[in-house]
Image 1 (cartoon, helix red, strand yellow):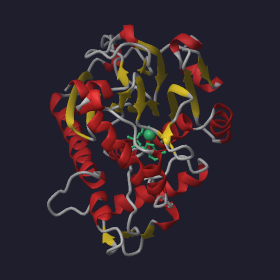
Image 2 (cartoon, protein in one colour):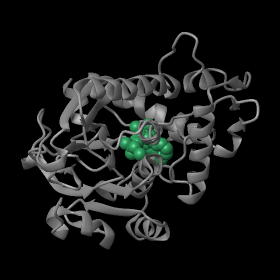
Image 3 (cartoon, protein in one colour):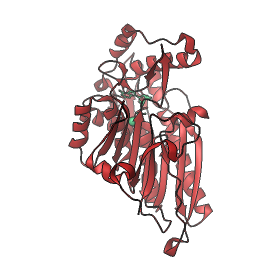
Image 4 (cartoon, helix red, strand yellow):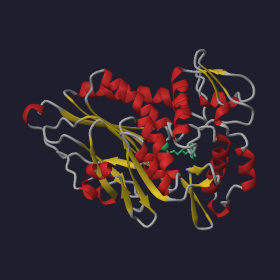
Length: 360
Ligand code: AMP
Ligand code: MG
């Protein structure tokens, strides 16, 4: 439970709007679930009845559960070929998978090029070594050690994304022996976007989904007061607390029909000789990326926002900012290690503290 809450990067600000005028018929409901993507998923929505909210939140839950099983790299699910099945069959045979896996991997390959190769879903062999050393280090902090560079370099020989063979027509994926996929940088955002699209299709137009740092706002809050949702950006410097509140947010972004996704060094890490080593790995150095304590990306598509948040966290400042500027409809902020916040103009306009934005 504590682990899950530590992972919670973005929180939803308590909404204090009181129903009035023509929107009095809508009430705010909220539910949380903890059993997908190793994180907490919060669904908040304005609906006319509780039954309607139940339908909506069941839809979110069922979708997240399905996609969690598809994108899992650690667990098997009866009757499901997932990313783990692809990894287990490396060098053996192509694996027939759900169209969502094909789509996710095509999206990942596409963004690999656009981000200059910093987010690589084929980095699995390297990420897996870090994962194992981190788990061992967390279990026995006195004996925590870094992975030997030689081991990382050897693993890095098997991370060529061009060798991920996607046969969209037959819906199969094949990787060579020694390769391993890790979709951790993109799966939550992808799942959030697919789910949001489904909700929109069904006519829901006042929903906020937060999946461990991936927030998607659909429409506006129907409280008769506000036109924008408030999304709290967690302060990377604030102590890790079980409860998140106004006191440990960095700023608030006011948005509608928008994704707000953060990546931070404080999400997952372990300590070796007094120093923290986190989970986002720079493919150039094979070590944790070192330029920022957190970044946030704001753009409509949640999958893009998720990939980009990991990408701009890894890239050095100049390249990171150039990448954001080169993309239409993408805004971002970077939290430097000394606490300085750098944000694009468009991002500032949505920020309560840095840009004086309001939610009405
Ligand atoms: P996020 O929290 O979205 O920034 O994603 C972090 C997760 O992405 C990690 O837990 C790893 O599973 C994975 N990851 C870390 N570094 C990379 C990388 N350079 N390329 C692709 N995936 C990565
Ligand atoms: Mg990401």
